[in-house]
Length: 421
Ligand code: EPZ
Image 1 (cartoon, protein in one colour):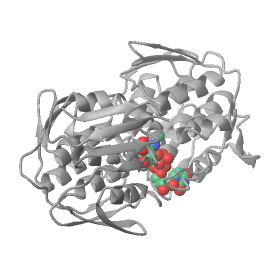
Image 2 (cartoon, helix red, strand yellow):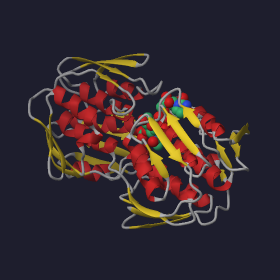
Image 3 (tube, helix red, strand yellow):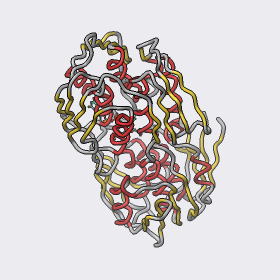
């Protein structure tokens, strides 16, 4: 297993290109199952999760070809030869459950393995299943698989989500676009990835309105056509790299950065004393004073502070000037990075969903272990600011969500290298 070595080397200066959004791409790719025509996705990120989704779609009979150094994906599901999403693939990546809605809509049948829990929480899919049942699907849980049938097709319905779920909103959008009649999704997720998926589905001929608000209305159509769609910029990658000059000092420009995608983070960074400017090419982040101010953060669904940036913010707060309280409201176990940051000399006290971080003068490099995608990158950020060498093990987590991270950071002056395990 590879690990990554980081040596604290002072301020970062340079430019970092922002890739296409992993979490948008993972919802866009299953849309190819809804039509016999080719779906072309450009600006796709080169990540192991995208490779996993590709394998899954190919196992269902789709053809997937890549071009432009894997940034352009052409997906074509002219014939769906298999409607079973195997446990071996689903257990590696929870987003696999997003093939359930489109498979049901296109073929009337699907067997998808239950994803099972993961490091950050139980992460059930009950809202996905309840929503599909509301559209007329008959679901049974058998041997760890969701056995879904809709022999007479899906019928539009009004669905009110008891809590905001990005994945359930996406799965129901992917199902409702070919249902008979109109579907209304209430308490839908507002994330930009939802709007990106709606934009793509509309270009394919779907009738969708209200995406980006809490009520999405979908009028089912008989068939969808292919289209060419550019994947939206990755706001979590963008936000992560914005915190690199914040923690290590310096001045970095995010090429393709968009403030509207990371507004809540920009507000928090500016409250710490970091400067965020919009430039012709994106966003510029600089840290001018010697120490940043502590701020409190509560994670919330978009447009609130993203849970996917909480670990990175915790790393940033470890060397701030006072005490900060981080409250994680989305997942029940998303503080595993705290233990690893403590090994680097941080002062963090975790109580349930709240972590209190008291700033220390500096962190010290140490061997640490990644536990999930965002925890791993928070340790990289900490290593950039720490005195000495930090070795982060189990970086396969990192490769799921960050493309060429070592290259992007070393181009800004970081001392960072991958050690082949
Ligand atoms: C998406 O996961 C993202 N993944 C996650 O990013 C992100 O953290 C999350 O949304 C929240 O923004 C992808 O888009 C591939 P949810 P998802 O359904 O859809 C509970 C990363 O690091 N819930 O919005 O699985 C759930 O347990 C990943 O890139 C149910 O109870 O998240 C959680 O507590 C990590 N029942 C809350 O809702 C359900 O049926 C929000 O989950 C579904 C969800």
